[in-house]
Amino acid sequence: MAKRPPKTVHALADCSYLPPGAKTFEPCIDEVEIPLATVEHCTHDATMCPDCAWQWQLDHLFCQPLPWEHDQ
Image 1 (cartoon, rainbow, N blue to C red):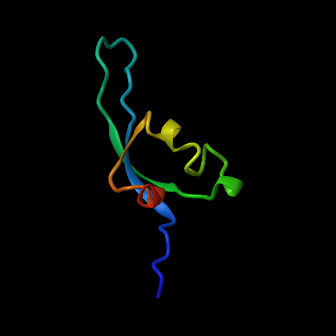
Image 2 (image 1 turned 90 degrees about the horizontal axis):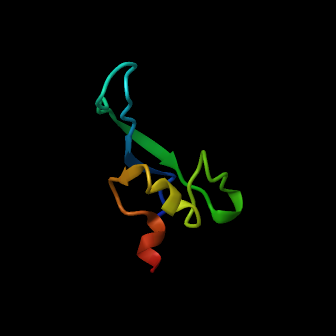
């Protein structure tokens, strides 16, 4: 039986913020599940595909390899 590709990828998102009146950022790291999609069905903001993954990498640290990285 062929292994099915994952529907999501686990990542850490940097949600640090600057509280009003503060001089330093308050650290905040969230664990998120990003839905994966094919290039044809990707929204590029609510889902991720191989074409837009680089944009997601700007704010997220992936905790597992992306499924299309195995194909390279």
